[in-house]
Length: 299
Image (cartoon, rainbow, N blue to C red):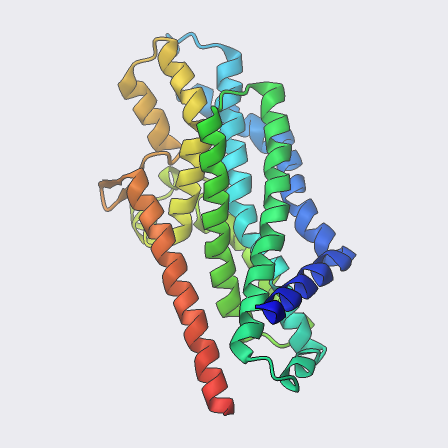
């Protein structure tokens, strides 16, 4: 246990000492916040208001609160995975610089080394994403804050689970990487593409029915929907208090992916959590199996 703690602390310190890697991880969600607030925020608002019946008279602050919740959910859904890939680069860097060989000449078990990378990456990722979440809360407070204490707690739980999903996925992919060039290539692909396939940049409801069915098999879409529900729940409740009909609110939820469907079957919040948890367990199991087979082969 002492060895695991020492190696985990070493990996965390290396991540935060590497200013380029640290600031790239931290700046990415903050840049997304600025871009969303300055550009996509207006697009979301115009799209949202245009879809509402003209007869509805709703406070502008509530609408801003809904949009802020949507922006926050998008940023967190993307950051949990992209930051995990950045944080997990310590493992690849050690292979690229041959620093991993220092571990191999010690009596430390290889599974202990792999577990130290896993825990260190999770801790580093959570620090970055929770800082980003705090920045989002400041922004939301400025435009329209409707989240309850339970909403904030559930969002923090979502961050933990989706970060573990991103960590498990990145651990499997990074297992095969051995150079800085490969790290950069994978990081670029994930940063550019993940936000689209998980429905963070554009709600799945805007895609074709066939593509929606395909993307419904991906765990990331359910993570995004969890963030949508908990970030927007308070503002949507305020809509209801304004006298907006339940069926109208339900259509709004569907348009922003709070309501998610698997082949026309509505997915419950509990089911979304089960999908994420099972995905983490399966991916982590695959990562453990890969390390076991590698150690067995080396032995």
